[in-house]
Length: 196
Image (cartoon, rainbow, N blue to C red; front, side, top):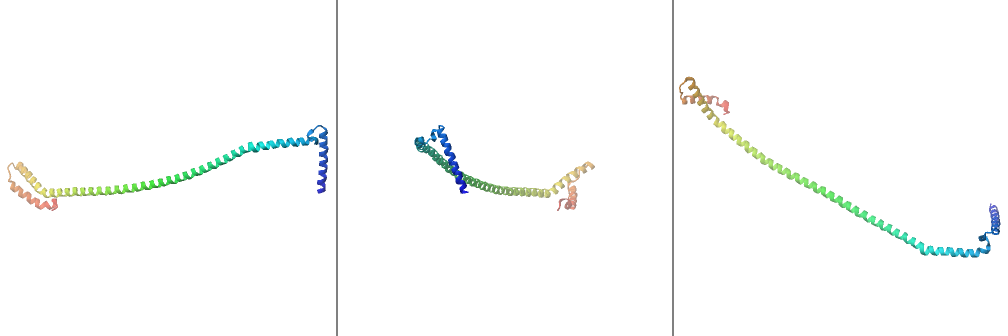
């Protein structure tokens, strides 16, 4: 295998040498060893100048641009982190304010409800007292009417009976006899009508 590779290299170098000689004789001066020194000089000078121009002028500008972009990116990242932290702090503050507001609203609602219940109960008590007083007054009036009713009824009955008997018989009747009859009837039937 190694012999085969060496053999191929020898054949390749022979062919290259033959091609170089053919190119030299055909008018390709860059392959003429006579011009190789000047070609190496100009090659070194050209690439040396290119290296100096690149290393002193172009690469520092590119490097400065890369550094400024890198610092700007890192500044932007720091600013974004700072803004994120500030926004998180603001969000926490907002959530605390919302929670505090909810609790305050709940407390205010509970206080208002308790106050309303106290007011309603106080007004209900006052109203109950007024209703009880009105009921008591009405009951007293009813008792007074019940007590005074038999006398008034007897008086009306006496007057009516007197007028009726006068119209029926045409003569005046003694009110005392009619009064005695009405009193006797009211005593007999009074328990039934007046609840006595």
